[in-house]
Amino acid sequence: MWFVPRDKLTVTTPPERLATYGFNRHVVDHMLCLNCCCAPFGMGVSPSGEKTAAINVRCIEQIDLTTLKRIPFDGGSR
Image 1: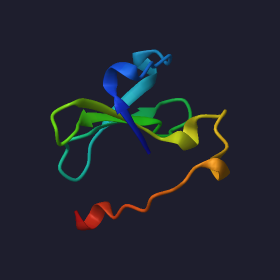
Image 2: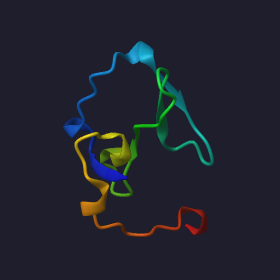
Image 3: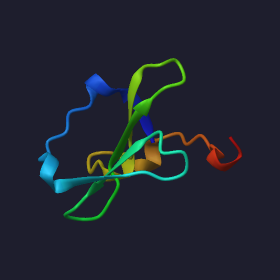
């Protein structure tokens, strides 16, 4: 996941081709592509109150995942 201010996210998929789902505490709107069923991004609010988008970088074709530094995060123990 790559977190950016929500106003920096540009979505080119028409809204009718996306579904929203929530789980756990329902504080993030997870977006689901109705064409391929992947979850490319989510929208929420950071702890500081900033509207934020969490982008699933695995859904960006131009990114070489082997070049990214991964930082483990245990969301279940949060």
